[in-house]
Every structure is written in C-alpha cells, then in structure tokens.
Amino acid sequence: MANDDLNLRVLAADDDPDILDLISYRLERSGCEVIRASDGEQALELAISRQPDLAVLDVMMPKIDGYEVTRRLRANPDTAGIKVILLTASAQEPDVVKGFEAGADDYMTKPFSPQELRLRLVAVANRR
Amino acid sequence: MPISRRLLPVMVLLFVVLIGRALFLDESLRAARSTGLAMGGLGLVTIVALVAAERRTRVLEAKALELAAQADQLREHDRLKDHFIATAAHDLKTPLTSIVGYTELLVDGSVGELEAEQKQFLQVVDRNARRLERMVDDLVLMAKIDAGTLRLDRVSFDLADLLVESVESALPVAEDKGVSITFNPLDAVMVTGDRRRLGQAIDKLLNYAINRSPTNGQVDLQSELTASRALISVTDSGGGLPPDEQSRLFDRFYRSAAGAAFGTGFGLCMVRFVAEAHEGSVLVSSESGVGSTFILALPAASSHEALANSGAPSGQ
Image (cartoon, rainbow over all chains, first blue to last red):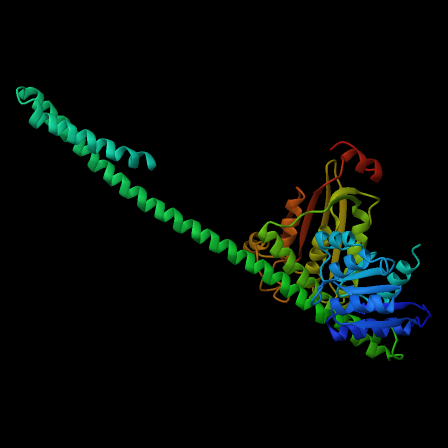
C-alpha cells in the first residue's frame, strides 16, 4: 500500500533498532532515502554531513536528546532549514510545548502509526 | 519556647539576690527576712516549673524535627514513585511502538496480502496493544492525580463530537464481544473542559459498560442538556450491582468480583476525579437483575450559548 515516490532524504534517529527499522521500512517503501542514527550526537553529525530534507527524531535519545538536537539544528545556518518531526512517549502539554519551542515542525506520540508518519512527513515537507 | 529559656537566668539571679538580702544584708528586720524567704520560695517554685517547661519544650522540638525529617522522606519517596512511573511508562511505550507499528505494516498489506483470518487475528493483536497503551496512560494519569500535578487543558468544545468519537473507538471492542451500542447523537453542545481527559472518562464508562454486559448484550449512551448541565448516561445490561458495591465503585483500586478483567482497577476512580475537576460529578444507579446506569454531569460552557446551539427549551 502507498508505494509512492516521495523522493525525500530523511534522517531517522531512535535508540531502539526495531523502531528505527520500522520507520526506515515505511519511508523507504514510500520512495524516501533514509539515513539512520541511533543517538543524538550521531543524528547531528549526519544532519550536517548528509543534509537531509527532514529529520524524524526520538525525544529520549542517549547523549543528546531530541529537543536539544532540534535546537542545535535550528541554530546552525547549514541545518536550520531541515524540517523536524519529534517522536515522544507522552502527549503531555509541557512536552509538546517544549518540542515546538525547540523549533520542531510537528510531533507524534508513541506508539505511532507508520502510515500516519508518512502522511505527516508529506504535510511537513510541503510547508513553504 | 525561647522565652522560658531567656527568663531562666533572670529568675535564678533574682532568687540569689533575694536570699542573700534576706540572710545577710538586712538582719535587723526579721519581718523583711521572712518576706525574703517567702519570695525566695516562690522563686524556687517558679524555677522548678520553668525547668520542667524547658524539658517539655526540648522534647517537643526533637519530635518536630523528627516529623519534619519523616515528611521530607515521604516527599522523596513520592518523587521517586512519580519518577518511576514516568520512566516505566516511557519504557513500556517503546516495545508497544514496535508491536503496533509492525502489526499495521502486516495488516495494510505492505508485505503481501493476507488471508481474512490472518488479518482478523492481527487486528486482535492491535486492539490489545492499544488496550495496553491505554492502561499505561491511565497509570500516568493516576500518578499525576496522586501527585496533584494534573493540569487541565481547558477549551470550549462540542461534546456531541466527542461522544461520536468515543462510540467509534468503543465499537470494535463491543463488536468483538457481540455487544451492540445504541446512541442518540445530540446537536452541538458546547462545554468547557479538557477534551482529552473527558474523552478518556467517557471511554472508560463505555468500556466498563461493554465489559459488564453479557455476550449479545446492549449498551446505551444517552446525552441530554439541562439549563446548566450536560448529562451523559451510559447504561449496561450487566445485571446490576449490589448496593455495597455501588458505594465502593469509585474508590481507588476497587475491583468488583464481576469486573475482574476490567483494566487496572482505577478506571472509575479516574472518571470521578476528572468529573470533579470539571466541577461535575458521576453517579451510578442500578437495578438488580437488569443493569446499571452511570451518569456523568458536566457544567455547560455557558447556558445561553449551549441552549442556543442545541435549541433546547430554556427554563427548568
């Protein structure tokens, strides 16, 4: 289903390999090129060296959390244009606010639907 | 008592001076001496009383310190418990993400078409994973209620929409059990409150009713608007509840013998808390051998606006 051709380069960062596989599988089938990172530090390095269109970041990651990765991406002119979707374990208001304040474009709550992730990705990528 | 402690040396001094004067300085006057002795005696009694008071004060002070330390310790335990629940909730959501996500990939045919029965079984996996997710959310919610850190995100919203959503999300569970849901959709009814929390409370009532109803039973959801309140009633066909159970139903962790398979045991307690946090209430009435009705009463956003929207008669 939905084996479309999104033609986006997406950085996916999560410390859980199964979730990383899940995101990669869904997005690759939708025609995305997926760059994988298993912690915040690696995500930042890959964002700079590979210049993805979009980043899907887990909030609770080792080394540097998703909020901080987002802030640093925004602070660097080379990566400021990368769209960010945060994956959070809670839909508590303070966490959501924190994500948007850090500069995220959207967020999804775990557990999330892979299909919905694809839809949100398209929506975020098409903004401006 | 710092005052008695400060008074003590003064009284001792006074005592010594009086005794000294009475014995050595003014020996010519026996009357004065006896007066001095009398005053000295009085001073002695006072000192004894003060010393006793001082000792009591010290005991009380020690007790107060001990209690303060215990309170600190309890606060710390509470903080640890909250932290533990938050961490556990996060840790539980990680495997749930994989269960729900991979199941979806299988069901939607991403990895090849499935037979009807294969699909059906995977939907059972999905439904139960979602149930587990709700339990984790309940746990977090209950911890917040306990810690007094739950904040309501109040907005004005259409209750009728929320009821439709709740019925839709309860349908798969009901169908699975062969329970039918009847429902009278209202016109727009504006209420002010935390839409997500109220949705959780209504979901709880519906799920509880489905759980209590026998196979092929019936659950009825009715909503009604009075001058100042929106009333949501959920009726099950579960044979009713004994009076002693009705009164304990909303207690924390109370689990009826009949509803042992229902959730984590604080579903109804959560409903009561959410209702009360909205200046509303929840109550139950039950008819033995027939079923029970739970009524959730919420204040309408503003009666004028609500009445205008619903077209309900004014007055009452």
